[in-house]
Image 1: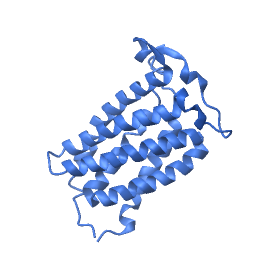
Image 2: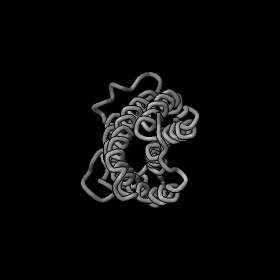
Image 3: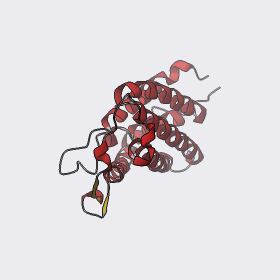
Length: 207
């Protein structure tokens, strides 16, 4: 029988990852000339898909959705304080949409090759998360979401070469593509810990 305490570590991990990512996404990765195409949040957020997939494998989709909802609620509340209401709203919408998509795809593919479900679900979730988050958080079209609690970073609307060498686009578009590239690489890297934990987190029957 699935007890609430069984998923508490997964809930805590999910909340910690998302809050950290919401805060770190505000800071460009100022190394190797990548400040215009990458933020620190890209390195932490993909781990949320690992937590989600391990929960899904161990306890099933219902428990994974429960972890997503609790992580979503905690992350939004804490992110308002850490990063401002617009970032919190953008993150919450993107997180909930992407993680629920991850749950659905993972569950559909759970009986296929061990790597297929976590890889495809996390990649699909990363695409959706990137599109929703960066559009709501930084696009000028959603500037009405800003409130007196925090001021938007107007530099994100400046035009820069796409990924440092392409056509000129708003900085937030270049950051979004750069972040997604890192999410793609980290999603591939997360297959290693997922595979290593398979024998320790065997599926259990949930009541």
